[in-house]
Length: 453
Image 1 (tube, rainbow, N blue to C red):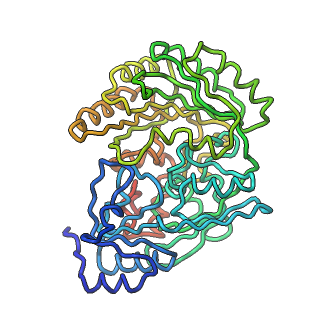
Image 2: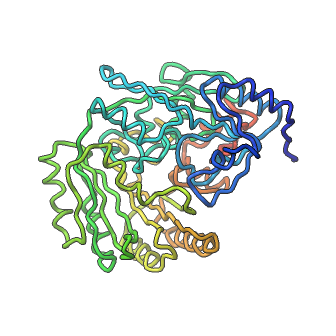
Image 3: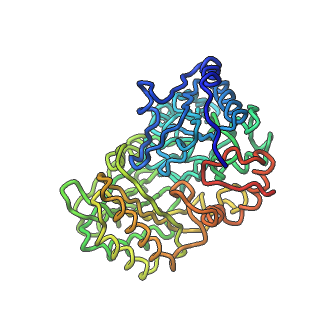
């Protein structure tokens, strides 16, 4: 079916109807407005609505629907697959960065254009935090809607588990609220169902009294990778809720490939020193940076490894088990990684995350212990084919060890079967919810759930 085209006169009427800015090809700020964190994305939308508030979002949704334009929604962060700018009209929430912390109630209202770094900066003034991304430049919106694994998830649950309510603009242009007491079915679906049901313009979060943590990285030579990964597997198994761990294989700036255990302890520091002692004493390590720090600081720890503009292609899956055979496969592919910027990770999922029933939220992957990620990153477009091919082959080789499903926030452009698996046993309920709130599949430029009809 042929796409609609933008009538200049009607586009001019949209520009006059919003408080924010309408950006079009030829405008001085167009190239900046269309670029995303992943440099492999070169989308060229016809209209970019830089929304200043909810009324602008309503105007953009109504304009796209009545003109037949495809619409995509962009938050404040990464969006590795580029779907956020793949529509003819982009609803850009980036300028919407309002935030209000209520320290007495232990809650926070935050608009969808915020990154986790910006969010943490405000909540940490009061010594409060909620589960956010492991990188500060990740957007709060996409991470929360897809589930939201983070440094304090073991203690506090996923980002979506801490979402109390959502403000949403639906496909028919209405602004509604979703919570346990209002549009509760939509509230269920927004906690892990992605951007399928509307434009979430703001979130209310539950906050926790966390300001100081023990965190850092203990890194070892890649030659010891087998021993380190086995130690990590056994060390985090049965770990206290307060301990979160990520194992990463990466290349240091000096060109040395290393395997590191990245940890965050969010409980009492005296107890944390005891719990972390085995990780610090295993070795000897190349480096050990574990130290007391602010929660805001640990969310900055990996930022240098995730600069904007590099080219990315990702594959990720939850693992059924981290067996010795799986470890051998990981080491084999890590030894022939085509780019020094690529990272391989094993995120440990446990504690509060695993105690939530699989059907209590749309995020179903409560029983998987590890989340595997092959995050290919490179700089030269001429190297794209070999990096993408390595990632696909790596993912295929890990197939025998995978659980039934994937983390939607780490998925690239995937087929319908893969998306179904990502939502697991909750897919049919999500499809019925999609039929109710978006029967025409207006919001389809995402990890898309098809309406049940």
